[in-house]
Length: 196
Length: 200
Image (cartoon, rainbow over all chains, first blue to last red; front, side, top):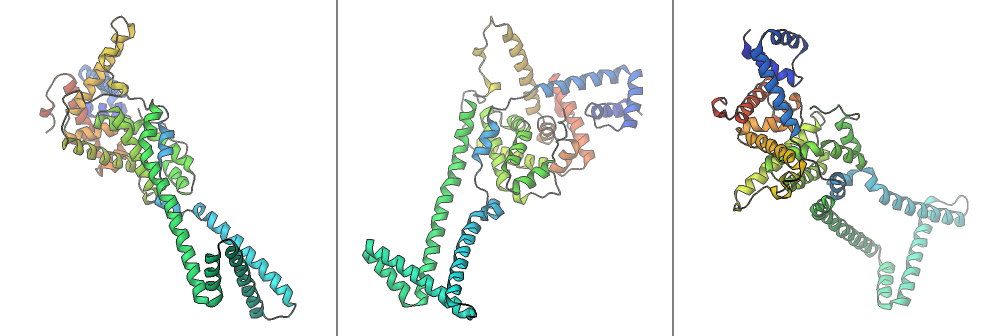
């Protein structure tokens, strides 16, 4: 084998990429070849120069990156993102179950299930009407309109529910979007501040 | 040169991050920040820009974390994103007017010479160190891109040969051969020779 192959091996050996059998053969060759030893020294010196040429990372860089991370799309799929809505749902469900229990207790043992459900629905409508009455006392026009909506037909009640959910969704989007945008735009400022 | 093998694999940290543990992403940032900043610095040649770009890369990778394919390595993915981001910056820069002053200002490596006082015993050492770093940087810049990118990935990105082969979608043998030739060219450049004779 000629020296050009051994010099390629030398390069790999300096990088720790030469398999052991070849490394042994190379070592034996280097003992008797001054030219290849010189090439090895030059290669070693070059690697030292490359390794020594380093830029220090700014202090606080990691913290700045973490602070600048915006809300990623995949975060919404995470169970943690659903925790609050689930808790709210559980609370509402719990309240409904409690109301159902109260209604069932009032009807007494042996009452049919549809009767209990109707009693529960009556109770809910009564609560809402009482709420609208309170609203009417403080803001008469709105309260009366709401009271009328709730007392006339079930389809209007559904419409009010949909409107309520849509408004909440819109509010949720408005609150989330500026937070994400703030995170992205602040990233450079934070990074510079951390450096200074 | 090669970093110690991490206790927790990168891919596990990605899984933990996706499960809602943001500190795991902090661990990934810690692992890659120096390698990424140094790699980007050799391409954009400005310390502030390299830091800003590294931060953008971390943010981009975070946002796309759910699209990470665990069959590949995180290291090769993040460096692919970094390389694309750096190339975009260089391309944009080519379309802008080039100022007449020095381009490399503001970074720790870019401090002007006037900060070094002649009577400061460390001044000569610092100047010589910077000169050497400048020579190496200049030599790397003069390499043809196909060799330069491998040198940057290996020596500043600190990727292994296997990782470079995966990142560049090249056979391992080609990576070994090109890196050998690239270092031969670097030696020639630092010794004042013309590397174009060796690039063929």
